[in-house]
Length: 350
Image 1 (cartoon, rainbow, N blue to C red):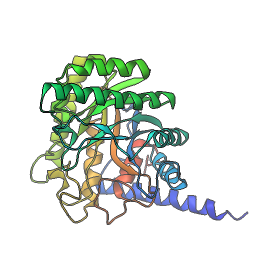
Image 2: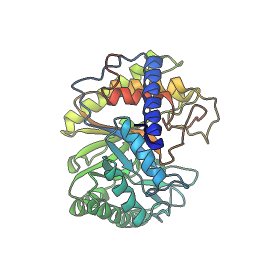
Image 3: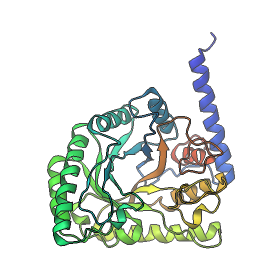
Image 4: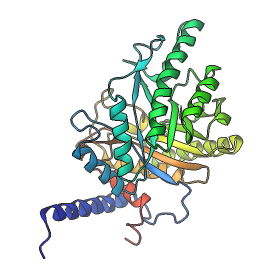
């Protein structure tokens, strides 16, 4: 019996993914035999909705199922908060993902078979969340009152929709020594009954966070400088150093580590400043560099203390990425194949 057009297309997509996996693995020189006793239990992507393909659309569904076929079993859903500048206490919910859309995103991800982390970010024009520092004690108090109210609303929705984990904050490095965090954590704990974490910016902030004992996991985003001179071995040495420090921190705190973000643009020179966006610097594509760096990160982070690793990022647009793209997404690039080989047994023996 002749296969339907839909079945043929699914077969073609599967074949293309397998070819991408083979190409990515050969490009990176990986052994193509996943570790049978890998420590990481959760792996996947930070999923970002594009304006033309929001959560709930058939296109977003296709994109999520393609992500699932890489072997990913967890996604982070990212609602944004917003404030006008780092010194302001006027923090509020952004308009990118209102409550109904957040509910829809969690439901769609769960239907696709993913564990879900809800991971709020703070957006500040021409700045970033790590620069937040209100100007006075009263401004700090007001900032935390408003932040707590917004986070509690998000945590309540995450709990109702069955999310597996919730981040009380992401990369708010200049706020973490404040005493108000204890109250925020207790309030969120009262409405969200599952895994709570905070996502520190790089290992340096993670080592200084005072409230890990109040949480269930140590969260961290990893965008450190990766050696010098573009040497792969120097990059690997930098990664191993970071992973060892995370190991040590996990032992001290008695908590598992969730690497909530690793990533690299598929652009020439991206390893010099892994955090740099395409808007900050134009560069020619370098698909091999992205694939190598992600492969080496996954190898370095495969250790007992690290329970989850999420890649930045994956778009709801199923046509995103591709060989000419220089953004962080791995879609349609050799890096997607590297993840496929690392997260599944499909490359065994090739």
